[in-house]
Structures are given as structure tokens and as C-alpha cells.
Length: 179
Picture 1: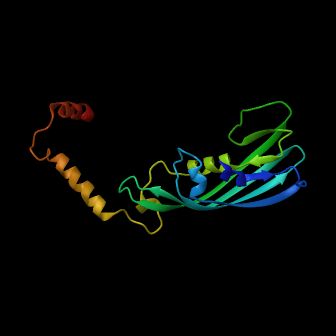
Picture 2 (picture 1 turned 90 degrees about the vertical axis):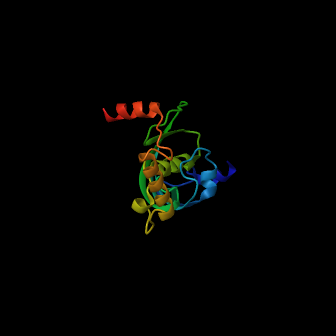
Picture 3 (picture 1 turned 180 degrees about the vertical axis):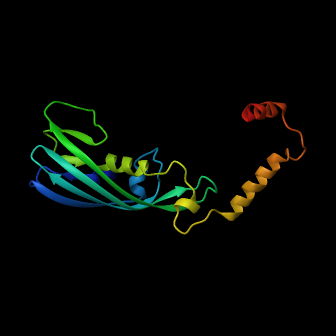
């Protein structure tokens, strides 16, 4: 988790106005999150921070590629990503542990903003629910060997397998499926 310390913005010494911060994200970032959908990527992040008297406005611009696995042929491909998000940071006196989607709440005594969880969330939400390298990759097609193997498996299943005997439980399920 020490690696994620570089994704903190010390705002206490900043003057009121606009400030810009640049970050890079690679596989070391994603390795810090055990259950991340994304394990590899090459992303550039620009954070435009507008400091006001009682709040901060952070505009995120994330561009680059993340490595995804195709749901059809299981090959890896680079998925281009361009994310624009905004987060509002409010300062309050009492302890408050509930952040909302767009509003981050910090104590008046806090002096830096940890953007690593926000970046992780923005990137993982950008992953499409269904990934196919021929549709989302740039200049990439599904692996023809794997597609041929899938096709032959489907044909074998439709023909009833090698011995032609189908388990009666599967026949009963097929009847339910067709209703």
C-alpha cells in the first residue's frame, strides 16, 4: 500500500485557484487492489483541482489502455479508455464516514486528498460488462483457433456427443428451456 501514497494530493499549502496534477497508472497500481477487474494498464491521469475556501473541485481526465480478457476467445487485448469524471470535496467539522458518488467528505484537519480509491473506481466502472476483442479492441480479432474449437464443441453438443446418449436430466431441462 506504500505504492499508493504517490496518489495523494497535498492541498493544504495550495493557494486558492486552479492547480493541475499528473499521474501515471500501471500494473503496480492494480496489484494494490486484490479483486480488481483490471490487472494491467497504461494510463495517464490529469487532475485539475480547483481550490476554494470551503471545498475542492477535482476534475479527472484518464486516458490510455487497459488489458482485458475477451469473453469469447479468452485472449488478452488492449482496450482504449477515456474517462472524464468530477469529484467535489467538502470539509466538515464533525467525523463523517459516508462519501457519496460525487461528494467526498474530509475533516477540516485533513491536509491531503487520496485519489487512489477514486481512480480505481473510475477505471473499474469503465470496464464493459461484456468484452469482445473484435468489438472493443483496436485492430484485434478473436483467436481463430479458439473460435474453431468452440464451434466444434457446439456441434458435438448438438449432435448428442460421441455415443449419442443424452442424460435424461438434460432432456428435461431442455423442455423447460423451450417453454
